[in-house]
Image 1: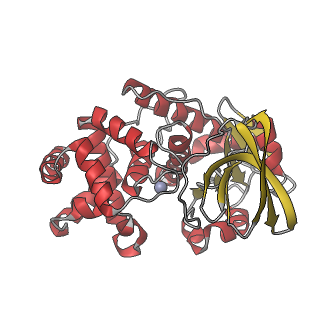
Image 2: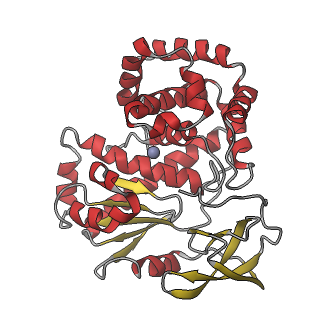
Length: 368
Ligand SMILES: [Zn+2]
């Protein structure tokens, strides 16, 4: 997604000034303000805008870069809502919670239910990492969730952004826009009342659907709370492993999030089914690059193994995992590590791969 720019420079030195980039956009010459995160040798830039959008601009698009003395300031929830409402169909409304801006043309009850679910995830997520000694930053940008009334509207609006995979998903998080988009999962076509939602979440099989929403929201949270960084190279087993660690929705409690760190049986079963044919270099191939996630025939096993590995490391070696995450965040923006560097970083954090492998398998086989 962010692979279009060849990067040679590190962080812009004037992080506090606002950068003003004049560029050729789809509708002629236009201007965007924000913070330049990287500038390529050829003149292309990656601009972080006040609403938290990452705008990659190629050298042929950039006309002029200037700066003003005002400090870079993230948009308020109201400003973020205004920005996104201009890019959505006319009938969207705003529902704001402590950390989220829910933009919806679904019912207000559904927006409220989403907001409350995500606030509980937020609390569970931040409490978990704070307890592990990781200082959790309050998100700099409002966390925006877009909820369409129907699946059809969701597919139509997002097909260009997501591609044909949109047919198979219930929601997605976009690293560039920083937005989670989903739809009214109850199937009420945007009319769900609180009572209907309460009945809906009690139905068998619904948990799996809501898991998708929580999974995508976990990606957004990890990238906005300082756990991972949107513009550095986070190995996919880490980003997916973390999202799966938190994805099991807690639908019972109205306050806490009791399922943080609970066993993810779906992923565990899948990993166990993979074990008989699991190659001896499986751990190495999972860590060294993202290819197993990108191939349809290997993706599900890669996800399961990423969950199992993340679960094992967080539960058994949490401090090393926190140190490893810090190492990943400190990397240069948009610079992608070689397979050797990935393995080296991993071994430095957790020890020799063969040793990790045997402890990992022993641990996972004991899980009940
Ligand atoms: Zn994911």
